[in-house]
Image (cartoon, rainbow, N blue to C red; front, side, top):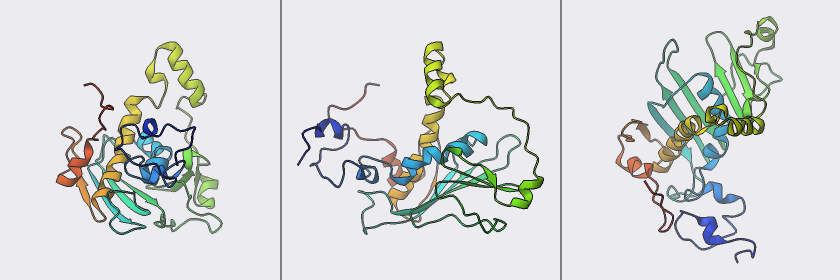
Length: 243
């Protein structure tokens, strides 16, 4: 039964008409394809942000997924219970190509070979494999450190050259007052491409485990007809947006 405090039709928004279910709200909606983006879209924004921004990755050339599902045949209904999604980014300027791998659920990131015994790969976070060192940090870029204590003790941190943020709330308010959208560092010009990267992983997983897509950001095509049909969302009548 729909709670008296909830307008179910408004909650559904542009999603297809469906009966109310306590298996969808208040929390599990994020695991359903019609309403959410699974673990990748839920936490990816807080984890992808740092490598995408710091390495200026741009759009991936390819996206490949291996995933497991709690229920067989649920590809059109729910996001995977566990997944490994591999993105390949082209070289850019002086930066070589970059491989970014996402793990969630029972698919866990491998432990770096030189990681100290008392450390573990972050449950929510990143591990970076560089030419000299391996670094990790938690979600939202928290607690960055080298994974090897001996290397960390002799490591000389580079000088601070990046502008420090006053925090995203203060940053957003200042950008509004100044009429300067770029002053909010996660403005749409940045956030939309970041979201696009995550959604490409969701699309690959929806097509099925073993899928590999080649992404053309200009034509919005993947080389896979089933995936291409998922790029454009189909809005429920009454919820379309003007061009």
